[in-house]
Amino acid sequence: MPSDSLDALNERLLRFARERDWEQFHSPKNLAMALAGECGELIEHFQWLTEAQSAGLPSEKKQAVAEEMADILIYLIRLSERLGVNLIGAAYEKIAINEARYPAHKVRGDARRASEYED
View 1 (spheres, helix red, strand yellow):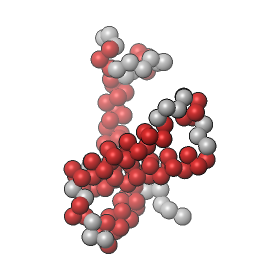
View 2 (tube, rainbow, N blue to C red; view 1 turned 90 degrees about the vertical axis):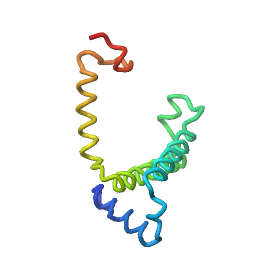
View 3 (cartoon, rainbow, N blue to C red; view 1 turned 90 degrees about the horizontal axis):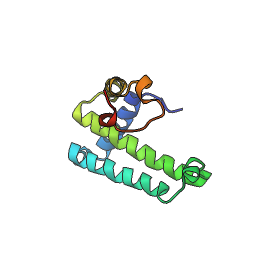
């Protein structure tokens, strides 16, 4: 059973790249570009679907979406490794920033940008 640890996944991805001598291609620029490409592939699965269709994907489509999401996660983890970014720490920091920018009592049920709320 695979570990649910980002560290364990990072170790496996690093081993995968090193065994194939691919780290030479995994510059931050290249990984960011690959990440953007995979995001585009994920978006293609939802293009032209209604809200209801996007929430109720058939199993074969959901599997394809899961594979694109995995590609995104893989490139994101590789990018964080190359840049020395702790993804979990960065996510918690960003959540704290968003909590301050979007106080629940002020924005509940309203999805405007932070700059569109009055102080």
